[in-house]
Amino acid sequence: MGFYRNHSNDVVPYDTCMVQTELSNLLTVFFRESLKKYHCADNFRHILIKHAHNTGEVMVVMIVRQYPFDQCDALNEDLQDKFPQIKSLEAIINRREDNVILDGKEVLIYGRPYIEEELLGCRFRISARSFYQINPYATKELYSTALDYAELTNSDILIDLYCGTGTMGILGAKRAKKVYGIEIVADAIKDAKINAEANDVHNIQFVNADAGKGAQMIIASKIKADAMIVDPPRKGCSKDTLDAIIKISPKRLVYVSCDPATLARDVKILMDNGYTPKKIQPVDMFPHTIHVETVVLMSRVEGK
Figure 1: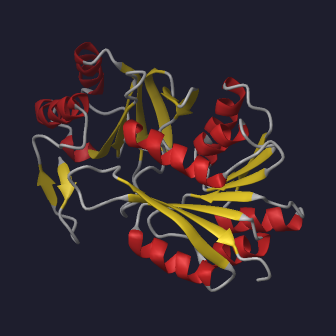
Figure 2 (figure 1 turned 90 degrees about the vertical axis):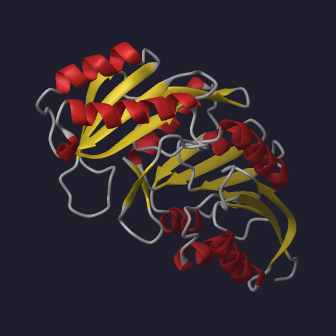
């Protein structure tokens, strides 16, 4: 167990990861020892640990080639005895031979199929396949900055592209007239709808679609967006998505990026099509690493 070596599939073992919680590190040690103890290492492809800092809840997902497997009951009982913080223990049966990890039948072993976390006065459900920022302390600053940049009023329409479990959209809905959240992961959309209901937010509508196709749906519906927040994966926005954003033409565009290179590429395209950067704020989401999140506010240049 460990991290992939740069530009390879070689696994480099580690004892302590400085950007993980102490509990996550203890779980890593537990699994490293248990896979040897119960002779089941060959069945495991990946172990996913989600730790909600503010609620203390923990999810563990075993990505395995088959389930159940020999001595899985003993391993599961040992895990629950040593880590009572675990509120969700699951397995994903993944027999693929490529590097796609979170694909396959999901099996709930213990507890519930989600954990909950609190952020900026709201409570959010997080399931195995749904994305949630891993640094809750910096996430508070990141999302607060993005929403402040959006300058929402109670008459504004907000589009939240790549909305995930609905965190920024739900927080923005408390300031805006209406929010549309778009996300390709179906499980994340399910969580987003439950999160909106749980936080008594009813002026938000979620669409399960690729960002580009979802943006095209906004265009087809002739919805006039005052503000848009985009929070794409590391590869940035696709050309189709950027074309759709330009056509929607929100007055204020807030781009949240985890990769400065793709951010620079996309900002250049947006600048060539009527937008100008107004504010830029980096947020150190990943201490002790070279990675940084960046929030950019871009405004539409009138007459373009």
